[in-house]
Each structure stands twice: as structure tokens, then as C-alpha cells.
Image: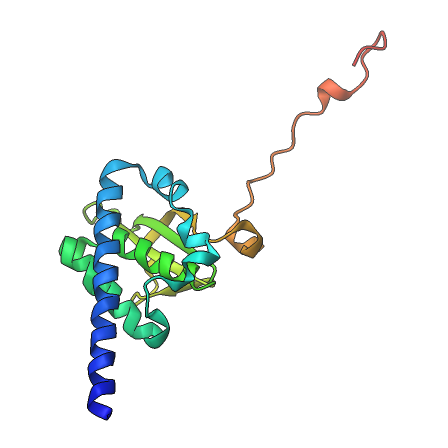
Length: 178
């Protein structure tokens, strides 16, 4: 009985891995077809409660195991340069599980080093799946939220710098004209 349960667990994990591999393939194709903002606008599935089932069987795997399978799926396609597809897949998995998720893009802070960009995911305001906080080595240049607006907290929306508009056109001028 235990052997059958173990075999079922292995089969379930392989099924989840295959689905993640296909999702990573779809991300690779989509990144070649659309610019990132357009791709994210076309991918509302991450925000859909109906997609919480994907990948089928995810509820039987620990979150850390699901993350390792996503890592393997994306690096199969791009090797060590898989940060953007991996951030998209990780973010999509987190958002579809009901978490506040955002994909963040950054460029290397050190000007003496060659230009390097990196993508990572922040889940519920915390960096996920990175050995260290990428913000120490990379300057954030963009953040794309994968969750509905009503789940976002003010810290996720940088407020624009307030520049008061000149008021001289609102003061009455001689002759009664503003």
C-alpha cells in the first residue's frame, strides 16, 4: 500500500513538472512575440480565481517543491539566463494561489561592471526564490503586478513626486480676468 502511494506521488510530481515545463515553453514563445507589458496584459490567467488549480496536482506538493520544479522547467529552456521566465512563472504561480505577486526588473548598480539586467519576483512584499535580496546589487527599474488592484497595498504603488503647479494663472488680474 505504501509503495502504491509512493508511486502515485512520483507520478503526480511528474505530471506537475510536465505542466510547468509546458508553461515555461509558453512563456518563452510569448516573450518572443510580445513586449513584456503587452504579454502581461494578455495574461489575465494569473489573476483569475479559476486558474488556482494550475498546475493540476499543485495542492499535493509543498510550495518549495513546486518552486524547484518551476526552476527546473524554466532553466531547461534558457539555462542560467532564465531569470525573466522564472520570475514570470513564479509570480504567476504565487498570484494564482492568491498571493500579492509582482515581477521586478532591475539593472546592475555597479557602473564599473558590464551592463547586466535581472528579473525577480516579490510575493506578498518579500523577494522569493533568490539567494539574497537582488535590490542590493540591482536598481529597480520596473515592477509589474500580477494580482488584482484591490489586493495591492500603497507600498506597491510608488507615488509620483508632487510638483505644485504655478498658481499665477489663478490669481485675479487687473480688469477681473483670471
